[in-house]
Image (cartoon, rainbow over all chains, first blue to last red):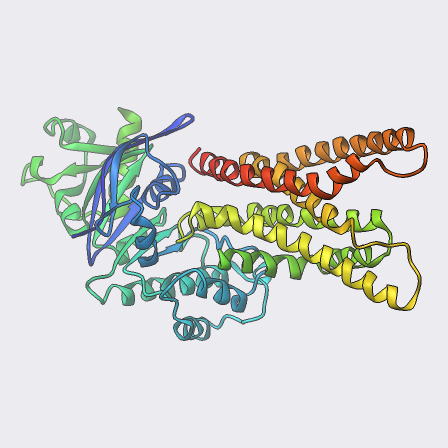
Length: 283
Length: 205
């Protein structure tokens, strides 16, 4: 079963539109939704959680249509972390625990206390006095303390220092050790997604450019560094994006379309995304 | 709904201690106007809670949690009823206790219509808050206050003209004692589904 299944979803919001979005997150895997600010990542997450209604298409979460009344029950199985805590700033961690105990049927107060201890979060300090790292850790503690099967994380690591980010990514890895657990994580910090994810979905200007297994992505694309003339000799469709300098050219290519004589480097995820965006700007 | 109510009470208690103390003082002053003032102010507390929700973008998170539209909407009504009810009970209790020691002209009889005025204002303004948000919704609330104040002044002037003997006509008394509670109940019954529709419209806009 797919933890999330999106089929041909469209949604217009003023000048911006999500167009024909189709995506599947297999259960037990981690999918990174990557894209620049304003690419549509948060909109996609709001659509998945029925916080926004699509103009067209269909979305199923943990096998249930998100517009059906049963989706209310499914929300119990989904842990949410947004880019900020979104809890009123005068509340403290103890009060949030009390509120969540009445929100989720499977709320585990002992697990929540355990996370607070692990993260070193004070019980009675108001959020307004929390650092961003503490705020995000609290949101993660809440998301993990009601036995979710699916975590949806929207920019959960942005604005955090590398040490805290690493710590948080480790927690997400722990979560997916149970093979029924899945994660959809959106970020514009590509290195975080590269570290964590099995699948990468690249959203650009409201359109899904690709959704592939991370390793398959690296196998499909490559980076070549050669002269400009050599680059221009490559078959049509081989070059997906290039940057030129007085000394030559560097380009993202489709490995299958490049002659074996041309040395091809394995690209990083960041390379792939940057070159694809550049390629589109040139087109 | 219990969770949302709890959240609002935590937020209000922490943030509104001085404000609540003022309301408590107004509620215990044995003077009808002060009681009305306390009750009307209590009727505004759900909007203060909504303002905190908007500021923290709580609604974005709540929309993804297992709260129904009914939970979200009803929690604000119940909060309003609770705060208005508390102000009324506080006023009744304090005046009863005060009456044991000193002679006052305060009567418990108008408390029910006073409380219903609080409910009435909630019923009228709540759908606007759900549709336009607290910022714009409060403008409508202020407008309503002006209408009520001007209307109230007109009513008093009318009563003074008609009641040459100094007594309030029986029909007016009946309206105050029975009509206001009935009107308040009817408008609340219409207001809740309207708020629900407004909330959904805003949520999915």
